[in-house]
Image 1 (cartoon, helix red, strand yellow):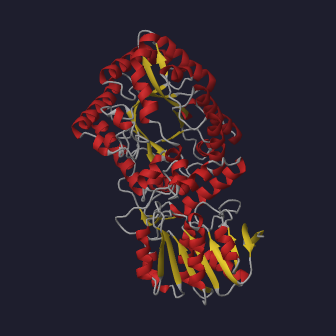
Image 2 (cartoon, chains in turn blue, cyan):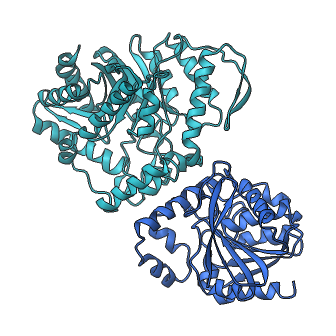
Image 3 (cartoon, each protein chain N blue to C red):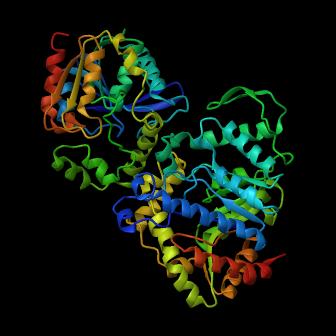
Amino acid sequence: MWNMEQHRFRDLETRSLHVGSGEPMLFLHGASGLPMWGPFFDALSARYDLRISEHPGFGASQAPNWIRSVSDMSMYYLDVLDELDLEDVHLVGHSLGGWIAAELAIRNCSRLASLTLIAPAGTRVKGIPSGDNFIWDPEEAVRNLFHDQAFAERMLSHAPTDEEADLALNSRFMAARLGWEPRWVNPALQRWLHRIKVPTLVLWGENDKLFPSAYATVWRDNIPGCRVALIPESGHLPQVEKAAETASHILAFLKGK
Amino acid sequence: MRFVCFTLMPYRPLDMDERRKHRSAWVVLPNELYDPEKGANEYESYIDHLVSAESLGFDVVAVNEHHQTAYGLMPAPNIIASALIQRTKRVKIAVLGRALPLVNNPITIAEEFAMLDNLSRGRMIAGFVRGIGTEYHATGLNPVFSHERFHEAHDLIVQAWTRPGPFEFESENYNYRYVNLWPRPYQRPHPPIWIPSQGSAETIDWAADPARKYPFLVTFSAHELVARYLNAYRDRAREFGYEASGDQLGWAVPIYVADTDERAREEAKAGIESLFNDYLNNPWEMLLPPGYTSLGSTKRMMKMRAALGTRPKHQSVDALIESGTALIGSPRTVIEKIEKMRDLTGFRNLVSMLQFGVLSDELAKRNMEMYASEVMPRLRD
């Protein structure tokens, strides 16, 4: 069973889920905030000492005014790795979290053993726009995350409590702070991806309506030795829609690393 | 009472069936629905409308700024102000206002107002706003930094108008080695600054501060809310240790007068209902992008919205009259409602929107003439 841990760093309190044993793995979540537990995390925590850390400003974690951008956020996580004194970390990031992970890795890979990015934000292909999740209405926003609408129906059938709605709004504010302008991209990031010196895997749902899977080519072409796998019949959350398949891609990639 | 004649310059020839196929008349409404021939006529009509306000005895004519929308055709309101300067002699000209956070170099706003102030020999009033939420979709600017940029840009502009240059300006968002306006503004120390607002506590607190005492205008709200916000400004001023004057308080409201209440209602109906239901109406995600209002205010508004239901309600002319969001009726009816607000709040700036929505030139003209002859004289101090 996982534990919810409070983590104090500088002037701020954040939460994280911590479970499993083995080599350390840090999962950085996307713009919706701390993910719901599911079979994907079961599969990873069966093999690794998994931390899913809530980003500052998301959900119940405090928003410091000294984090104004993804570049600040990546520096924060470099500090966190130092503070926890983690070595040979398998860093996994989804969407916004993938962008943070990549920004961290171009700055300093010395505490990383590998990097796995699932539908990461942070790059683009000019002429292929991303979806505008800030203009979508709440139902559209859920539907556009999934290829299989049964997942969307399930999510939409749950009316959030007041507390859940408040936490979701915190996440939305912080996501906008980090990703509104320019929208979900750092135009400079692509220029420095060659600095990522650890084995890297990029996974993408083939039917992603937020960040088109064509963006995977940018990562493949700029990170030395980067492997890319597309997950068929999946939208922006392959770790939810195709949990077993996505987890097995990661476990196979990490085997022997 | 000081009378301001204001128009939004809506694009009236809009195909409303096409409009309703889109989520908003803002940002996402295809601009193929704009016909330049018709649009040019619109500009001509609206400028004539504002120019005629001078001879009808208005004190101020006013325009404002919105982007990528059929709701108002003034992404660059200073261009209209410049045209008005050339066609008027006495009347003050208010830009209500420029959206400070949206520009990357606020010195351009300081420069433009300084030029207009010289061109008009000191007839300018400078409104400062943040723009509505949709503006942050239209410009791509991050709404989370909107308040911060507004305050920094305000400080920069006021300093540019008043401090001997060249000087250096440093802030989080704006950094300039040389700030040195040529020309300086005509008025000393600078054109009056007015703050149109939808009534947030943060804005009231900031505008009422004794360091500023900026006139505060409440725009397009129900009668009861307008009174509450204006009195909140009064209360805040008292807490600061002074009594706010009526000149610091303004109300922006659509007004329509005709011989009888019934006739006014009939003539205003299409215009006022199109304003609120077709031009102004926006989905939540467009009107309130994250960070545009504080987290606390947004949470309060979300709870109100949950209680009211998610679908925006159609606003009928009767409902708009009933709530006092629009003043529509005989001169006597309209005078009574204005007097009631004056008794409640002591406000002195009445920003009168006499053309609204699809209201035709002919009806707007008749409305304006009757308002000037039957309503304004009764309310002069």
